Each structure stands twice: as C-alpha cells, then as structure tokens.
Image (cartoon, helix red, strand yellow):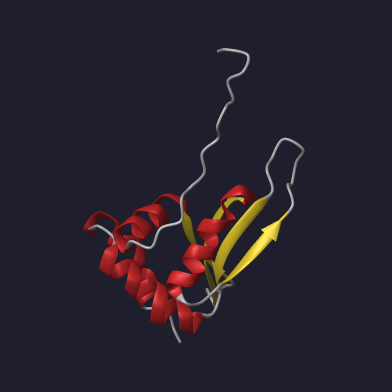
Length: 119
C-alpha cells in the first residue's frame, strides 16, 4: 500500500426499502423477553456508533422506538448506538406485522411467538 493511500472504513448506508430493512434486521436485530413468565419484550438493533444514522433511519421508518447511545464497554470496543422498541403495543402493532410481511418464509417462524404476545 502506498504511503499516501488512506484506508476507508465503510459504514451502513441508511435505507428505507422494506426488503433491505428486513434483511438488515435478520442480520443485526434481536427480540428479547424478560421475566418468568415472559412479561416484558424488547426489539433492538445494535450497531457501532459510527452507524447511528441507520438507527435513526429505522426509528423514522417504523415511526416508533428510540435510540440509545452507549460508550465503549472495553478499550478495544467501539462506542455503540441501538434502535430500541420496548412498548408492547408498538411491538405488536408495528414491528411484528412488518417482520411477518417482509421476512422470507424461512425466518417467519422466529416471529410466531411474538405474534401471540399478550397485550
């Protein structure tokens, strides 16, 4: 590599195409439940802080949720940003229907348990 060459680190380009977002969520998203029995549910997409724009694009696309910024947890980690939806109503009315409609059939089985969440 020449001395005057610069290394370019690419980041995720925010997009609003539903199929792209569904595929992105398959790779980066996470549904979690807490409590016994499960009484609290969260959907999140965690990224490096450099990709906070993608978290903003998800929030704007879904029209719900919020963004959490977190400093690096270890010196060799990056700062982080996460798009989070914690409201059960928003999960049931917005996120899960989107996932059910746009995910390929091979992934829809992952959303079945969420569709039957109590309101």
